[in-house]
Image 1 (cartoon, rainbow, N blue to C red):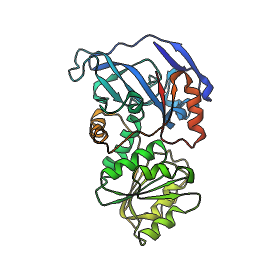
Image 2: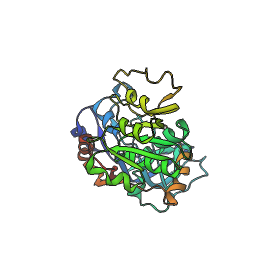
Image 3: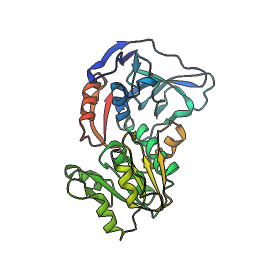
Length: 316
């Protein structure tokens, strides 16, 4: 099968087109013909060597799949050849989705939303699973609560706004002036232009000093430290970012707040729940651009430069 492979860590130009053997599914696995995948920050972080202690080269990256079941293992009864599916592969395994085919355990696979094309569906698994873990499992977000979602025009942020609104929350979000229309179109209640407004001041003013129930940090830096100042007592702060910068936690200690550091794990049942919301029209794909898989290097460069609205999808 054709793949885009890396044999060394480095810049986006380390990708090479190659041919490797098509894998065979084990008893509990499916062989899926990939119709589309997408690019996520974890992909370029892995490629440049951020997790090289956890990776063996050569490796095929990629952490989203939308495709068609080609073959099933002997113990698989839930799926059949020809089924359209979507899922998030296991991260940091070196056998990702920048390929023609992928083998996955049946437990991480879900049926593709019927109202989405493969290109649209490929934009959703990793961000969907991540946001579900952040808001629903760790954050325990409830109707009537308030949430601040940082970087609302990005892949995670744009999905999180929609899930939070579907759950009945009031949503604050941040973005640049050129992207303000996108979070508004997704239902955000208050969009903060971080170039012109200080999000902490806005939230203090608009909540009469009470703060928000939950913060989703997607950007890092001093966000954790600053976000504690705008959380209500017993609030929840969820971060999906590596924390290399020391944080001052003094603003948190007397509020009984909780901090969750989330690294998403694939599980098909989460995508089944999200499929229901997608098919009801409560969550829609947000796609910046679509490129052929062979232009994965271009896609990585674009995502690393920043300013992407939603997801970059790679089509087979």
